[in-house]
Length: 128
Image (cartoon, helix red, strand yellow):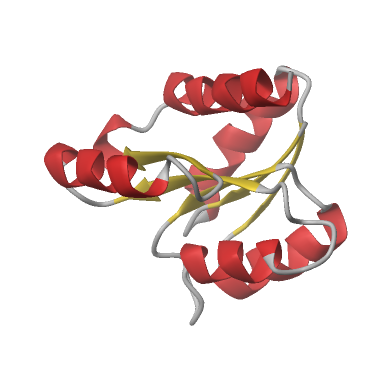
């Protein structure tokens, strides 16, 4: 599985790349919406793990929907990290996750390696 991480700053990004690479995943990262889009076109990830508000002019949902419209990306999945309350995040999970290719919407305060691994586990189960 190939994972592309998109975080606003390199200090947030590097630990995620190191951790998931140590688990055997192919990983790459970017810090702006434009860079995520360009990197994804070359890297061809299976999953995007993105903060909603990335640096630059393009947010993570715009990147995701742009990519899934392209040939070869129709099975791309997204784990979206948002800066919302837990109750607002639950509402988003109920709306988005069921049919859109979004594996999970995680509030930034609950973000850790295990929550992302849960989303990846859900994807692996779907692919089996």
